[in-house]
Length: 350
Image 1 (cartoon, rainbow, N blue to C red):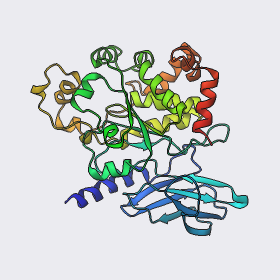
Image 2: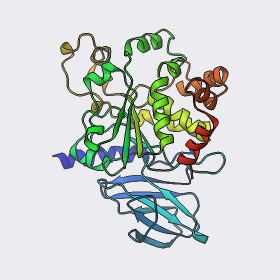
Image 3: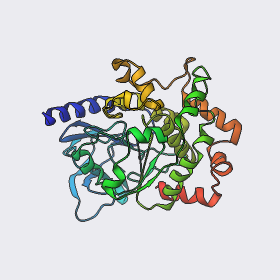
Image 4: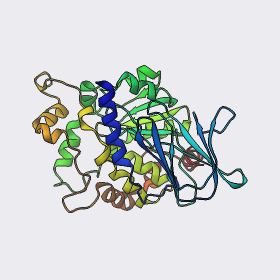
């Protein structure tokens, strides 16, 4: 029964990510079934195709093709194994590709942020940072997969009420450093509710400054991969990812397209454990969750304002006016220096 459910979950993920986007990726992997992924690439110049357990080509890696010219190529990579595809072209030039969406049985919106090309032509490294929704229902197979990622840090962006009902276990299972700051969700929910659905992220950059500071500090330290997440993995996590990509030099069109992927990649049924709302009468996230119908709880909320503007696009407009952009925000509010930002780019880009 579990195998059938797992296959169904993988089929759903494959359908969501199989279609190529116009975001700036030179190559991508999309899962077709539990045993196969499809490699897609723009450049069809001949390349050797290697399958590797890490992002470095060495003697232990398997060469799948010697001089492939295919724009699309099926590769035997099981869903239970984190594998990287290394393309080696003329002159020994190499490019690493990986699955952006991890094929977890009971995860939601868990993805690697690597692979996007910056305006300067560099690429965001794979295997350095992962974003996600809440993870209260991960299976043993999921933990086995996540144990292959070299995770050294888990930064929980959620409030104390959210952590009460769905505490993280990933750090305990993997021996990772856990970082979180105590705050109540109530003021944030009240603030977002006052704006009629417009500019809902405004002010979150200061409310969540301790969490964002911790996330960037761990990325700069380079001490193991960093997982950062909130409940849905789309709003607080979307802001964090947008800031990171913006500072690294990813163009905003790509950032906004990546941000919108959360709507299709969320699996809300795995973001909240089975609880009785009567046991949490003063918990705002539980009361909000169960105030909605079962059908509503199973659907991701759209990431657009009532006027049809992307929430993150509105936030970037505000950020530019208030701080002169993401880098200005990192300096003025989070307290990072030019050297810190230089180290972040050196750590995250290749």
